[in-house]
Amino acid sequence: MKRKVISMILCAMMAVSMIGCGSSDDKANDSTPPAETGGTDTSGSETGGSETGGSESSGGGALEAFTAADGAAVAPNAIYKPAADTSDWTISVVVKDSSNGWFVRMEEGVKQFAEDYGINAYQKGPVATDAAQQVEVIENQINQDIDAICVVPVDPATCDTVLQDAKDKGIKVICHEGSSANCDIDLEAFSNAGYGAYIMDNLAEAMGEEGTYVTMVAHLTNASQNEWADGAVARAKEAYPNLVNLEASPRVESENNSERAYEVAKEVLKTYPEVKGFVGTSSMDTPGIARAIDELGLNGKVFVCGTGMPNECRELIKSGSIHSAQLWDPAEAGYAMCVMATMMLDGQTIGEGTDLGLASYSDMVVNADNSNIVEGAGWISLKKDNVDNYNF
Image: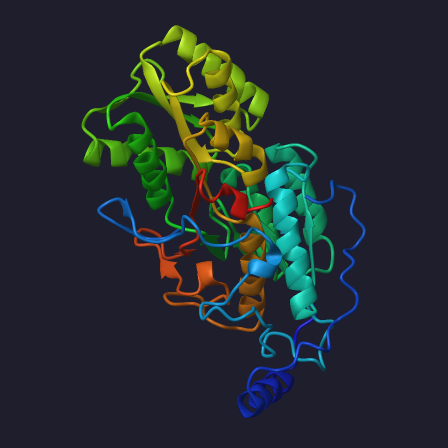
């Protein structure tokens, strides 16, 4: 792997300290990824379980809306990539599924980072959400001349061996949405428990704080989504004694497929007519569940809150089929992962208070249970009055 000469680092740092934030005019022109045979494209802390970070009305969804903590436009920091040394680093981002709209949006952030910082960063992913296929893509990438790899794992445990191979090659490893044992660091948009609690607060509001509900995840092996669902259940037990998780079928799987989410929700509602609410964790769950509610004529009687994309949920939110959709901007997450990779390559320490130059990731918090996880405050709630502010 290519590495900076120590003297060059020191010179660059001295230059930055003398002139302040450097100009972004001099950028690397080549952001083309190495040849690839796999598919292309592609937490705020809480107190007592209640949401204290995030936003319900901020942002516009466009990359131009990326802002630093002080509201200024994001500007590359010259210390990360001195203009005299523009070809050193290559950052690969590997996502769960290159065709999923969530990760298409994430790729916009990766591309924006590459443009802003003049660093060769690009995104890859399997053509379907499949752990084995993702491992193949990761293997291909670590055999390229890359310096850092950012992974959104389908199944963190399945990635353990291949990510250890990456570390053995001297590649920095950043994870998002689920930490493999062999990640150098796991960047999360928020506390997983806090996000689940936030979803439940919204569902409780819709259900009048009483009734039976079900949680849905893409797969029972998906670490982050199950943690969100666990956080929702814990919040209900703590704050809403009249909300009851369906005992016969408390958690169901959508296979990360909106059609499957629709079919499963319809089956649940026919089998268990007492169900009044759903927590959806995958971005495919929430619109699929809403379709089932509509088809069975239960709009206003059964409610769903959970992760969802603005453009996929917009009309369902406006019609009332979805009470509210929760999310974080995947483009910001992709951008933030790449910024973190540059900081690690530059030898900087990541920890409490780390600022990645984005408002949602400006004052990072170290997870109380796992010091390898750092969390931002990036959640958003989409409702009728703000859904049109977002376009992705």
